[in-house]
Amino acid sequence: MSILVTPRATEKAYGLSAKNVYVFNVPLEANKDQIAKAVAEQYDVQVANVATAVQNGKAVRYSRGKHRYPGTTNRKDTKKAYVTLAKGNSIQMFEEPTEEKKS
Figure 1 (cartoon, helix red, strand yellow):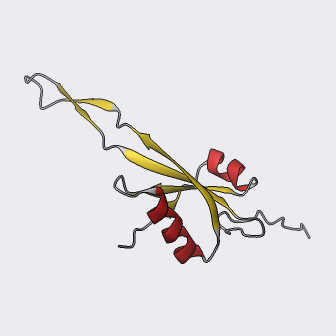
Figure 2 (figure 1 turned 30 degrees about the vertical axis):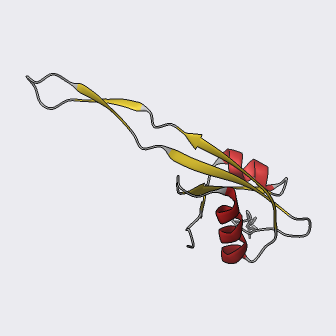
Figure 3 (figure 1 turned 180 degrees about the horizontal axis):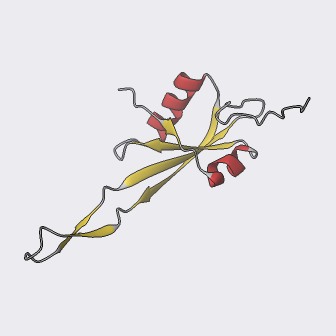
């Protein structure tokens, strides 16, 4: 079973990429071995370590109309994977800033 991992484009993820740690959104059912295998296959790199974190969905309020009692529900839970790559490996996720010359 192959899983799809997608990179997170956040400021924290950008800062961690300088330390050779990359952050990915992963399915809740995926374990660390599956995540390491998927990252290695999709990005052609060697994975040294995988740490995961499950973020519980926030409670949100909603209204069903003007005269009906509002209710609460929860957003979906999400799972993040912090993947450390072996030395000499890197993933080009973020675009490098290019400086334009004024003429």
